[in-house]
Image (tube, rainbow, N blue to C red; front, side, top):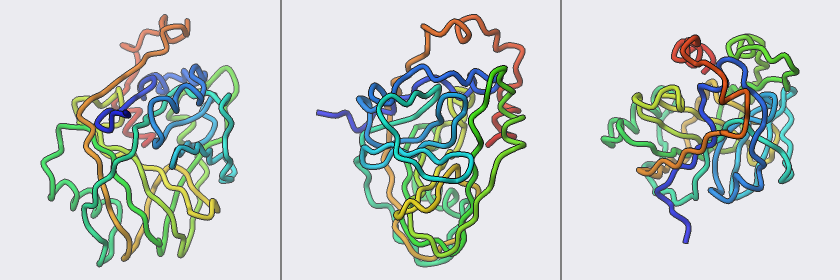
Length: 237
């Protein structure tokens, strides 16, 4: 039986900071640990959303592509979905208001949890980047060249994770959210939204299963003490 309280994380967000973008885990192996999640691809190839066991990539052009099992990732978070209803949206909700309301309802600041909002968004803005080539740039350089996409009256799912601040670097301290439209017309890393209808649900994940890419020589030899991990994550996210 799947453990629905476990967040499986492959790699760390920190490894992306200096440009360690090589995909070192196949999706077929990642999906053994969850049917829901987010991440990025080999070479920072777009933004990933895993929904109902199906993995999608939002590429640098904003196209939503279904992925095959051989696609590889340098970083991803997944879990087995068992969401519980939190509240229905009946007034204007934005990312900051979503975070404020959830954290005001629950004392979850020191545990991992997944959050999901399904609804129709009056406005929504996402981003993605093109796949990078070697020699890989740093994460902040890629973020400065991100491609942004805007939608109106789009029905879909905002989904991602909250990580405690004490894990910033391993993951994004705070909320890290992606979006995918029901009709696959758009998606990506969430930048902004506005909606006044929808349903918010959440799932506490009090167990972290983290796997590091120990067979990747670049990762094993890299000295992270020279990287401004917190600063780079703050700017890129």
